[in-house]
Length: 232
Image (cartoon, rainbow, N blue to C red):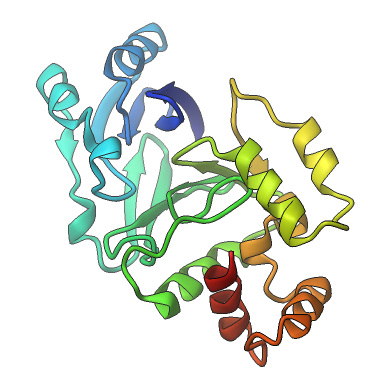
């Protein structure tokens, strides 16, 4: 399974995930660029879908569906793990509620497309208000192999690392993480995220000590996650 990242607006990131000649457009706000890449690589866009229904992620849907014979997959209707055939390979779609109730993540053997659930360097706001669901979604994602590549819905890397340095000012991995940042291809591996992304470091000894110093609830992973979200 392969992936093409296409930037649009100020920091949105859309994708074409494909296997051989069959693909799915995900949050594809840059419609013309997506169509051109598909034409240039002889890829049929079979499906159009979104990581969630916020307007900045769905803006390209109508145009793409008009320009192709693609089938629309409504993320709001995915409540169980779903499997989508693309060529010879299978793409998994996981419900990952938290940022919003309808958030989903697309998973292959090598990478995940996480929308606004898990960013490179941070996580989304909990607009759903359901911190338990958000925690469970993130726990599932961070249980994947350390070399899993993360393709998110926005490029917030620079600001995220500024915040990470405030939260954990002695984290030696932040500078190295930033040195690998490329605005033309925003991607990181899960192992590196677990070193620098404070919002998924709720089980790191340094973070537990941080929360204890602040006298925040820190008895369990779920409590620590919520404490981090509430403080920062």
